Image (cartoon, rainbow, N blue to C red; front, side, top):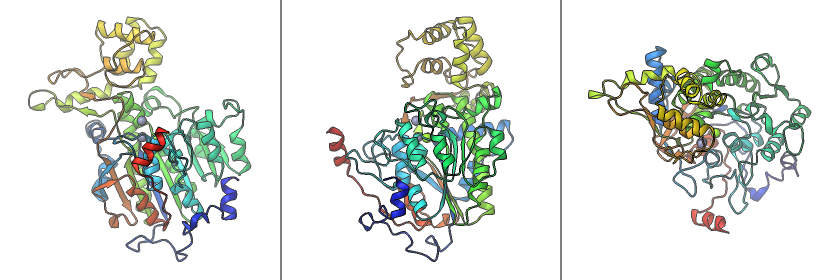
Length: 486
Ligand code: ZN
Ligand code: MG
Ligand code: ZN
């Protein structure tokens, strides 16, 4: 039976009597009796406090402005969030998104499922059951872990063609992001045209920024890339075509605002994580600034729609790129950071350019053009070997993909008294475990206990705001480890 049929017949709602939908027909109220009509959750994927420092420094020195992020933290209930998963201090994005969406910690790699096959109901499905409109807006594939964490139930996050089919089963009214390859009949293994399933359900489908702007529909599917959306740095400086996150958010809010019953939306700045994995400080900066532009749109929306609660959170850190001190009394710290203005393309874009002619003079020329850095002969030789795929280099940044790892290595900052290289170095190419930023702004935010919270607490924030009392089943760490061992 398909999910929408389950919901129609009430079979899902009858499960163990755990659902309590419609228990408060008079309307939704948070603890302060301040009515909450809409909840917007803005996920920054793989984002840490050092990323704030780099973006803030750039905005101040080169854009003459402050960050919306700083205004948010000034005006909201804000703090830090523990991001651990059920079985590890370090989480992946799937378990992280599910912790927010279900109030339960799960094991990395799965979506809304325990290793023994027990499924969990994510908040987006619960909101749909309550009659709310819903939306997912992301710079990644719509079938990628963070958005999928709010609608899919599957034992492996990489099965995105299967995840896409779960998306068509009671789809959110607004879906904007990437991921054409999991939807197109020409690119899917089973040849199934998933777009057709959306057309059957009265969706308007848009594939470009121009079409997005013109769309005038109450159900909107926008897919703007085969995979993830291009990096903002490539859109901005290299003219790669794509809508910005702020443009997608603006249109998404316009559509969702048309629903009288209110809405729940998850918005994701998903490629902060990707840039951090690759230790790409320039790509990272522009992903954070693009997120900040979208955040400004969202705060403006909350200011003009006071019945809206906005929650912003990072799902975990990635990379731990640190803006380190340079020079005597660190007086060269800010000016050395100015080197970031010379970064004008993402690592994948730079690697593509290098591949055109993988010999030392071309490689050093490309590096200079897009990063301002003059590679040494030794570094150019390393880079050429990596481009030819014949380099078994130690994973100095612990990121296991070549030639990105080598590019990151060749662009690393110098010593503390070297003002000639950008002063950002990364500790790893993996996710990290430190506390991450979290904030709540708008309707009911002042009643939320922020400070140091757990990722699962954010489910309670949303559920309480939307008057949802469903509790997902829990599993102990021990039971999860036993099930995984089987
Ligand atoms: Zn993540
Ligand atoms: Mg993500
Ligand atoms: Zn990641």
